[in-house]
Image (tube, rainbow, N blue to C red):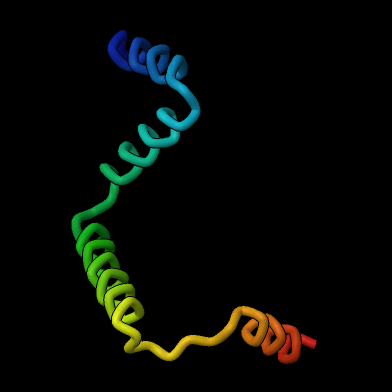
Length: 76
């Protein structure tokens, strides 16, 4: 193991848990191929589109109680 890696590990372990989680996320994302990041970008666009449609009242919504009741009904 290189001295730089050992030093980085020490520094990373001294971070707050939230900071370590963020660092781990960034490092894992750096391993992904470009097509995955393109897919994630498209999902982000789709999410934004759906949220905008919801905000405009363009989506049919259902009360949570009805959704949970239906889920219980079909799983029994």
